[in-house]
Amino acid sequence: MPVRKAVIPAAGLGTRFLPASKAVPKEMLPVVDQPGIQYVVEEIVRSGIEDVLIVTGRSKKAVEDHFDRNPEVEAALEAKGKHDEADTLRRISEMAHVHFVRQDEPRGLGHAVGMARWHVGDEPFAVLLPDDLTHPRATLLADMIKTHEETGGSVVGVKRFPGKEISLYGAIDPAGEPDDRGVVSVRDLVEKPAFSDAPSDMGIIGRYVLTPSVFDHIARLKPGAGGELQLTDALREMCRTEPFHAVVLDSGRFDTGNKLDWLRATVELALEHPELGRDFREVLREIAARERLTA
Ligand code: G1P
Image (cartoon, rainbow, N blue to C red; front, side):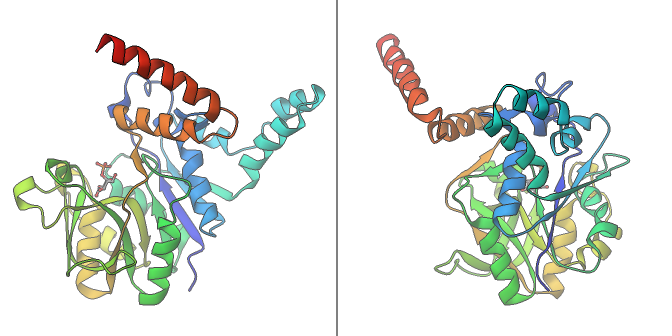
């Protein structure tokens, strides 16, 4: 069965990005000139999926407004002859069929994904965490869907995190080295292991293609790391009974929930921006020259 639906859990409180995320949902913070969550929806659309379910919570109304039409602003732009800008706004609401469901309580990522059960039904689906951005040229999600089609099982996107950083992620225990396409079979998964216990340096980077059996495993979850219902714990059960693979992404991933990585994403994507890139490169050169003088 093709992967036709994607789920974005976006109910998190965003405490890593305070105070910016106090009144603005963290998913709406701009990366260059569009909110982070828009890059994630664009990534979904690029992979061929048109149906997106966003799991929101209280105080996330701006996320819903962003993917809705805004006829007043569109009319104001048209009246001023700014047709391209009006088209850009319309494109956001038309690029996918975006649906919303609210997570009633913040009980963890496993619980948030479980909220998608009635929308997804009995078919494979993708999950993308909105704090994790991949470079627009990365084909990770499409590669993961291909691996799912070849194996019939679930697939996670991973990156190597040499050093203690692996403790911030769900780590996989791979059955050997990745093949030349970066695909490796997964034997086990551990959520946020201590560095000394990590089964490998490969951590999940917020990209999943899952079979619908995940919902039964989520329904049976007990609180795990941090007292939350962890998606990784459900996947751990799945990899014992179904084919389970990881696809390794070498570069082009940003953790925009982290202030420093958000800055890096902003700079790297601004440098490639069709209108801003050239001028921004000059700005960066000036700053770098000044920093060298005062270093
Ligand atoms: C979540 C997942 C973790 C994954 C990470 C990727 O953790 O639980 O397995 O590696 O996202 O960003 P969080 O960062 O929400 O604590």
